[in-house]
Image (cartoon, rainbow, N blue to C red; front, top):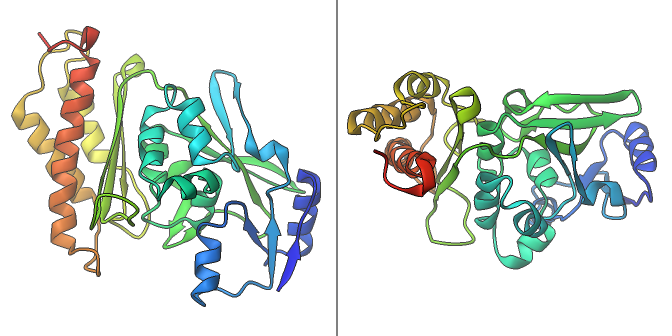
Length: 289
Protein backbone atom coordinates (compact mmCIF):
# COMPACT_ATOMS: atom_id res chain seq x y z
CA UNK A 1 0.00 0.00 0.00
CA UNK A 2 1.47 3.34 -1.05
CA UNK A 3 1.35 6.26 1.38
CA UNK A 4 1.07 9.74 -0.15
CA UNK A 5 1.66 12.78 2.07
CA UNK A 6 1.20 16.08 0.23
CA UNK A 7 2.33 19.26 1.96
CA UNK A 8 -0.17 21.57 0.25
CA UNK A 9 -3.71 21.52 -1.11
CA UNK A 10 -2.39 21.83 -4.65
CA UNK A 11 -0.16 18.79 -4.14
CA UNK A 12 -3.13 16.85 -2.74
CA UNK A 13 -5.24 17.65 -5.81
CA UNK A 14 -2.37 16.67 -8.10
CA UNK A 15 -1.91 13.39 -6.26
CA UNK A 16 -5.63 12.60 -6.45
CA UNK A 17 -5.66 13.38 -10.17
CA UNK A 18 -2.66 11.11 -10.74
CA UNK A 19 -4.03 8.30 -8.57
CA UNK A 20 -7.85 8.53 -8.51
CA UNK A 21 -8.13 5.32 -6.50
CA UNK A 22 -6.09 6.77 -3.61
CA UNK A 23 -8.19 6.91 -0.43
CA UNK A 24 -8.08 10.25 1.43
CA UNK A 25 -7.38 10.01 5.15
CA UNK A 26 -7.54 12.73 7.79
CA UNK A 27 -8.56 11.53 11.26
CA UNK A 28 -8.62 7.91 10.08
CA UNK A 29 -11.45 7.00 12.43
CA UNK A 30 -13.38 5.26 9.63
CA UNK A 31 -10.72 4.31 7.09
CA UNK A 32 -8.30 2.66 9.53
CA UNK A 33 -11.08 0.62 11.14
CA UNK A 34 -12.06 -0.75 7.73
CA UNK A 35 -8.43 -1.53 6.89
CA UNK A 36 -7.84 -3.21 10.25
CA UNK A 37 -10.88 -5.44 9.77
CA UNK A 38 -9.96 -6.29 6.20
CA UNK A 39 -13.00 -4.53 4.77
CA UNK A 40 -10.89 -2.29 2.54
CA UNK A 41 -7.44 -2.54 1.00
CA UNK A 42 -6.78 0.66 -0.96
CA UNK A 43 -3.85 0.82 -3.33
CA UNK A 44 -2.79 4.11 -1.74
CA UNK A 45 -3.63 6.34 1.21
CA UNK A 46 -3.68 10.10 0.64
CA UNK A 47 -2.81 11.73 3.98
CA UNK A 48 -4.37 15.21 4.27
CA UNK A 49 -3.26 16.02 7.83
CA UNK A 50 -0.42 18.37 6.80
CA UNK A 51 -2.69 20.74 4.87
CA UNK A 52 -3.53 23.78 7.06
CA UNK A 53 -6.29 25.07 4.75
CA UNK A 54 -8.44 22.09 5.68
CA UNK A 55 -8.28 22.58 9.44
CA UNK A 56 -9.71 26.08 9.80
CA UNK A 57 -13.00 27.86 9.37
CA UNK A 58 -14.09 31.28 8.20
CA UNK A 59 -17.19 33.30 7.38
CA UNK A 60 -17.84 34.00 3.71
CA UNK A 61 -20.82 36.10 2.56
CA UNK A 62 -22.75 35.39 5.75
CA UNK A 63 -22.15 31.64 5.65
CA UNK A 64 -19.64 29.59 7.59
CA UNK A 65 -16.99 27.74 5.62
CA UNK A 66 -15.87 24.81 7.75
CA UNK A 67 -12.70 23.12 6.54
CA UNK A 68 -13.03 19.41 5.86
CA UNK A 69 -10.21 18.65 8.30
CA UNK A 70 -11.63 20.57 11.27
CA UNK A 71 -12.02 18.14 14.17
CA UNK A 72 -15.33 17.55 15.91
CA UNK A 73 -13.82 18.87 19.14
CA UNK A 74 -12.93 22.21 17.56
CA UNK A 75 -16.29 22.38 15.80
CA UNK A 76 -18.04 21.99 19.16
CA UNK A 77 -15.78 24.45 21.00
CA UNK A 78 -15.49 27.14 18.34
CA UNK A 79 -18.78 26.93 16.44
CA UNK A 80 -21.23 25.37 18.89
CA UNK A 81 -23.19 28.59 19.37
CA UNK A 82 -23.46 29.24 15.63
CA UNK A 83 -24.40 25.78 14.39
CA UNK A 84 -25.99 24.22 17.49
CA UNK A 85 -27.63 21.29 15.72
CA UNK A 86 -24.34 20.21 14.17
CA UNK A 87 -22.57 20.71 17.49
CA UNK A 88 -25.11 18.52 19.33
CA UNK A 89 -24.60 15.80 16.72
CA UNK A 90 -20.83 16.15 16.98
CA UNK A 91 -20.98 15.53 20.72
CA UNK A 92 -22.51 12.10 20.05
CA UNK A 93 -19.59 11.00 17.85
CA UNK A 94 -17.53 8.33 19.61
CA UNK A 95 -15.32 9.14 22.57
CA UNK A 96 -13.36 12.35 23.28
CA UNK A 97 -10.35 10.76 21.59
CA UNK A 98 -12.38 10.05 18.44
CA UNK A 99 -13.79 13.57 18.43
CA UNK A 100 -10.25 14.95 18.68
CA UNK A 101 -9.31 13.04 15.51
CA UNK A 102 -12.52 12.67 13.54
CA UNK A 103 -13.59 15.29 11.01
CA UNK A 104 -16.78 16.36 9.29
CA UNK A 105 -15.06 15.93 5.93
CA UNK A 106 -14.19 12.36 6.78
CA UNK A 107 -17.79 11.71 7.79
CA UNK A 108 -18.94 13.00 4.41
CA UNK A 109 -16.29 11.05 2.54
CA UNK A 110 -17.44 7.81 4.14
CA UNK A 111 -21.04 8.73 3.28
CA UNK A 112 -22.41 6.21 5.75
CA UNK A 113 -26.21 6.33 6.20
CA UNK A 114 -25.47 6.39 9.94
CA UNK A 115 -23.08 9.36 9.87
CA UNK A 116 -24.04 11.59 12.79
CA UNK A 117 -23.05 14.82 11.06
CA UNK A 118 -25.25 14.31 8.01
CA UNK A 119 -28.81 15.04 9.28
CA UNK A 120 -27.93 18.51 10.67
CA UNK A 121 -26.30 19.40 7.34
CA UNK A 122 -29.49 18.43 5.54
CA UNK A 123 -31.69 20.35 7.98
CA UNK A 124 -29.58 23.48 7.49
CA UNK A 125 -29.36 23.36 3.68
CA UNK A 126 -25.59 22.95 3.81
CA UNK A 127 -23.46 22.72 0.68
CA UNK A 128 -20.34 20.62 0.22
CA UNK A 129 -17.37 22.29 -1.45
CA UNK A 130 -15.37 19.82 -3.57
CA UNK A 131 -12.37 20.53 -5.70
CA UNK A 132 -10.12 18.99 -8.33
CA UNK A 133 -7.55 20.33 -10.74
CA UNK A 134 -10.52 20.99 -13.03
CA UNK A 135 -12.08 23.46 -10.61
CA UNK A 136 -14.41 23.85 -7.62
CA UNK A 137 -18.11 23.11 -7.23
CA UNK A 138 -20.68 23.31 -4.43
CA UNK A 139 -22.97 20.31 -4.02
CA UNK A 140 -26.19 20.70 -1.97
CA UNK A 141 -26.23 18.23 0.90
CA UNK A 142 -29.45 16.71 -0.49
CA UNK A 143 -27.60 15.77 -3.68
CA UNK A 144 -24.33 14.66 -2.10
CA UNK A 145 -25.38 11.18 -0.92
CA UNK A 146 -26.03 8.83 -3.83
CA UNK A 147 -26.21 5.40 -2.18
CA UNK A 148 -24.97 3.29 0.72
CA UNK A 149 -21.49 4.70 1.42
CA UNK A 150 -21.50 6.43 -1.96
CA UNK A 151 -21.35 10.13 -2.69
CA UNK A 152 -21.36 12.54 -5.62
CA UNK A 153 -17.59 13.04 -5.74
CA UNK A 154 -15.88 12.52 -9.08
CA UNK A 155 -12.88 10.23 -8.92
CA UNK A 156 -10.41 13.13 -9.00
CA UNK A 157 -12.22 15.34 -6.45
CA UNK A 158 -11.53 15.94 -2.77
CA UNK A 159 -13.81 17.49 -0.14
CA UNK A 160 -12.51 20.94 0.76
CA UNK A 161 -15.14 22.36 3.11
CA UNK A 162 -18.75 22.57 4.21
CA UNK A 163 -20.72 25.78 3.70
CA UNK A 164 -23.52 26.29 6.21
CA UNK A 165 -25.45 29.34 7.39
CA UNK A 166 -25.25 30.26 11.07
CA UNK A 167 -28.45 29.30 12.85
CA UNK A 168 -31.22 31.89 12.80
CA UNK A 169 -33.50 29.77 14.98
CA UNK A 170 -33.42 26.81 17.35
CA UNK A 171 -31.91 23.50 16.23
CA UNK A 172 -31.93 20.02 17.72
CA UNK A 173 -30.49 16.56 17.08
CA UNK A 174 -31.58 13.25 18.56
CA UNK A 175 -29.95 9.84 18.34
CA UNK A 176 -31.05 6.34 19.35
CA UNK A 177 -28.39 3.69 19.85
CA UNK A 178 -27.97 0.33 21.51
CA UNK A 179 -26.24 2.09 24.42
CA UNK A 180 -25.82 5.65 25.63
CA UNK A 181 -22.40 6.48 24.18
CA UNK A 182 -19.82 5.48 21.56
CA UNK A 183 -22.33 3.70 19.38
CA UNK A 184 -23.38 3.55 15.74
CA UNK A 185 -26.86 5.04 15.50
CA UNK A 186 -29.97 2.90 15.18
CA UNK A 187 -31.53 6.08 13.79
CA UNK A 188 -31.06 9.83 14.09
CA UNK A 189 -33.12 12.94 13.48
CA UNK A 190 -32.26 16.62 13.14
CA UNK A 191 -34.53 19.65 12.96
CA UNK A 192 -33.79 23.33 12.35
CA UNK A 193 -36.18 26.27 12.48
CA UNK A 194 -35.58 29.05 9.95
CA UNK A 195 -37.84 31.85 11.26
CA UNK A 196 -36.60 34.43 8.78
CA UNK A 197 -38.23 32.46 5.97
CA UNK A 198 -40.80 30.67 8.14
CA UNK A 199 -39.57 27.20 7.22
CA UNK A 200 -38.47 24.02 8.94
CA UNK A 201 -35.54 21.83 7.89
CA UNK A 202 -35.18 18.16 8.75
CA UNK A 203 -32.62 15.37 8.42
CA UNK A 204 -32.97 11.62 8.92
CA UNK A 205 -30.04 9.26 9.44
CA UNK A 206 -29.53 5.50 9.62
CA UNK A 207 -33.05 4.79 8.37
CA UNK A 208 -32.60 4.61 4.57
CA UNK A 209 -29.84 3.83 2.06
CA UNK A 210 -28.79 7.49 2.35
CA UNK A 211 -29.38 10.32 4.82
CA UNK A 212 -32.46 12.22 3.69
CA UNK A 213 -34.91 15.01 4.45
CA UNK A 214 -38.56 14.51 5.35
CA UNK A 215 -39.86 16.95 2.75
CA UNK A 216 -43.57 16.23 3.22
CA UNK A 217 -43.19 16.66 6.97
CA UNK A 218 -41.42 19.99 6.42
CA UNK A 219 -44.15 21.25 4.10
CA UNK A 220 -46.79 20.24 6.65
CA UNK A 221 -45.13 22.20 9.45
CA UNK A 222 -44.46 25.23 7.29
CA UNK A 223 -48.21 25.55 6.82
CA UNK A 224 -49.26 24.62 10.37
CA UNK A 225 -46.95 26.59 12.65
CA UNK A 226 -48.01 30.06 13.75
CA UNK A 227 -44.72 31.83 13.12
CA UNK A 228 -45.93 35.36 13.79
CA UNK A 229 -47.91 34.92 17.01
CA UNK A 230 -45.94 31.86 18.17
CA UNK A 231 -48.95 30.04 19.46
CA UNK A 232 -48.38 26.81 21.43
CA UNK A 233 -47.74 23.65 19.48
CA UNK A 234 -50.89 21.59 19.03
CA UNK A 235 -50.56 17.91 19.99
CA UNK A 236 -52.18 16.78 16.76
CA UNK A 237 -49.66 18.80 14.75
CA UNK A 238 -46.72 17.22 16.55
CA UNK A 239 -48.23 13.77 16.14
CA UNK A 240 -48.83 14.21 12.41
CA UNK A 241 -45.32 15.58 11.98
CA UNK A 242 -43.92 12.44 13.64
CA UNK A 243 -46.00 10.24 11.34
CA UNK A 244 -44.76 12.03 8.24
CA UNK A 245 -41.14 11.80 9.34
CA UNK A 246 -41.50 8.05 9.92
CA UNK A 247 -43.14 7.65 6.51
CA UNK A 248 -40.22 9.42 4.82
CA UNK A 249 -37.78 6.78 6.05
CA UNK A 250 -36.97 3.52 4.29
CA UNK A 251 -35.34 1.48 7.06
CA UNK A 252 -34.24 -2.16 7.11
CA UNK A 253 -33.98 -4.84 9.76
CA UNK A 254 -30.38 -5.34 10.93
CA UNK A 255 -28.40 -6.24 14.04
CA UNK A 256 -29.03 -2.82 15.59
CA UNK A 257 -32.80 -2.71 15.21
CA UNK A 258 -35.84 -3.57 13.14
CA UNK A 259 -37.39 -1.38 10.49
CA UNK A 260 -40.56 -1.03 12.59
CA UNK A 261 -38.55 0.08 15.61
CA UNK A 262 -36.70 2.67 13.56
CA UNK A 263 -39.95 4.13 12.24
CA UNK A 264 -41.40 4.26 15.76
CA UNK A 265 -38.23 5.87 17.16
CA UNK A 266 -38.15 8.47 14.40
CA UNK A 267 -41.75 9.46 15.07
CA UNK A 268 -40.99 9.90 18.78
CA UNK A 269 -37.77 11.85 18.15
CA UNK A 270 -39.51 14.08 15.63
CA UNK A 271 -42.30 14.96 18.07
CA UNK A 272 -39.89 15.61 20.93
CA UNK A 273 -37.37 17.70 19.03
CA UNK A 274 -40.17 19.73 17.44
CA UNK A 275 -41.57 20.53 20.86
CA UNK A 276 -38.11 21.55 22.10
CA UNK A 277 -37.28 23.88 19.20
CA UNK A 278 -40.74 25.44 19.10
CA UNK A 279 -40.63 26.12 22.82
CA UNK A 280 -37.21 27.72 22.38
CA UNK A 281 -38.54 29.78 19.49
CA UNK A 282 -40.97 31.41 21.88
CA UNK A 283 -39.57 34.73 23.05
CA UNK A 284 -37.16 34.64 25.94
CA UNK A 285 -37.41 30.86 26.08
CA UNK A 286 -40.63 31.38 28.02
CA UNK A 287 -43.78 29.37 27.50
CA UNK A 288 -45.63 30.08 24.27
CA UNK A 289 -48.61 32.33 24.85
